[in-house]
Length: 383
Image 1 (cartoon, rainbow, N blue to C red):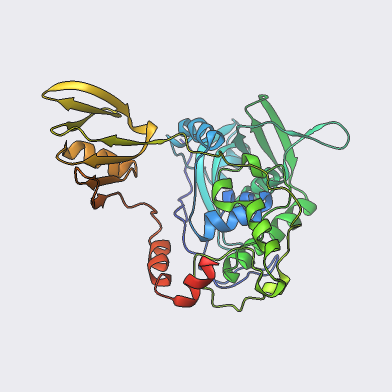
Image 2 (cartoon, one colour):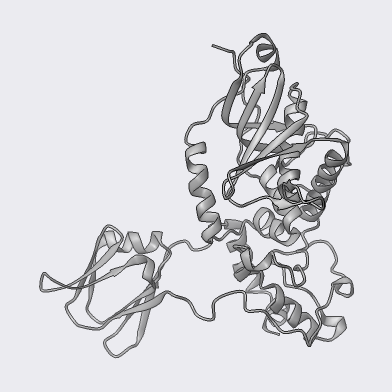
């Protein structure tokens, strides 16, 4: 049994730091550990990084759900990587899964899907659901965000005393392992991305959306970002009043609205989100009904007879008109699913509403309520 290296830092995310680390220089007690996945998001889209890392917003789509399912088996069992000295003394390959390590020097942290070790030389392996890109010479290659994410893992392993000269990305769509050489050029690109991430997080200013990018339709946050709509709104306002988008938090740094990029007002807005939601409101107006829950289904009964069954994932709200009973189990399930329950009189007068916590970011909720009392902010938002 090989000895193991103790975990240095927890993988919990913290709030954005105020300082910016110089490229290649050791960090002095960093207040923030940047997750490798967030640096991947930064290279993919700085605006996506800001939403997820700074504002704590996230939404699922088909691709993120599939990726989470694929990673569930990897994350089910966390293992520790033996120290370099122990690896050097063994003559058999070592494979450690779901290893979390960090670097105080660069202020980064990563949860590595798999680490393959042959002696003191280690190779991080990351699993991706997509397919590799095609290089200029026709060969397969890893995407830039994936290359930087694996380079972050390599930097962490090097600081821990391991020898790491390459990394591997496994693309499950094509079942291909793509090797990445962790050379000086990739390291410089990665360090620049880390510095850029800290600068954006510390500045508190949301980056502009990408322009006509093919990345937007596949992004899970496209309904929050609204890239084309944001640019169209910026182009329709006078130059002095243009601003890409109102920040959700109060910004201490001065705003220079004249430096924001502007969209072409004649450019059509792409439909990147559905015109209407698939979820529908449920209205119940028969007096004496009772609503219970069985699994993920609401069961509507009249005199102990089930008259209708509705799946929770098909409704966006439940509206009760008059004297209709709702079980505690059903209320809890609706709150957990963030489906509001509205109470009305038989004539349609609104009484009140029951809903879950909604946005789970307490800092965001606090700022929303505070800014609602700031007339200048409300006026700017209304415009």
